[in-house]
View 1: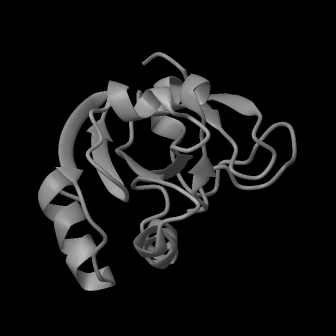
View 2 (view 1 turned 45 degrees about the vertical axis):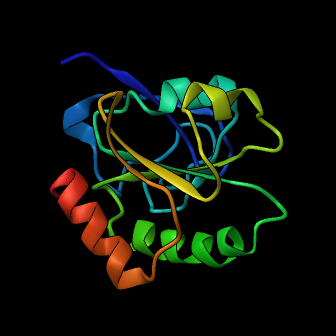
View 3 (view 1 turned 180 degrees about the vertical axis):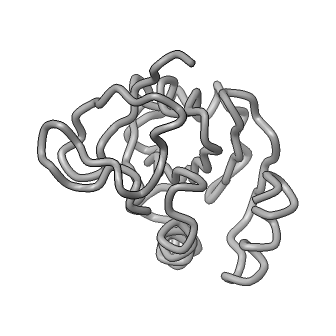
Length: 144
């Protein structure tokens, strides 16, 4: 199988991995910390395109600084990411700093969460949810 690039959630450097090496014990060759440890990654328009093509499912949460529901939802998503480390990757995108992504992904508002599998959009959530509701949405959307 072909190698793919993954961004370390700690040092933000890219590391090349083989799909069979995916686990939360894989260490970054740059900083030595675990790459897939469940910490969400912040992305911009350049890095997002690379991140969604991961062989593991990717959840992208679009948010902005002035959104109260976004601020309440981000810790919920981060907690789920930690619980499902190695099974999915969580990416946060601040749309106020990446305006072009709003039109690219046809966002109607924030928070908006999009689930991807190997670069393909699987599901869209146009609101914030409680933890148990979000976990259910993830399971139904990505079968994980």
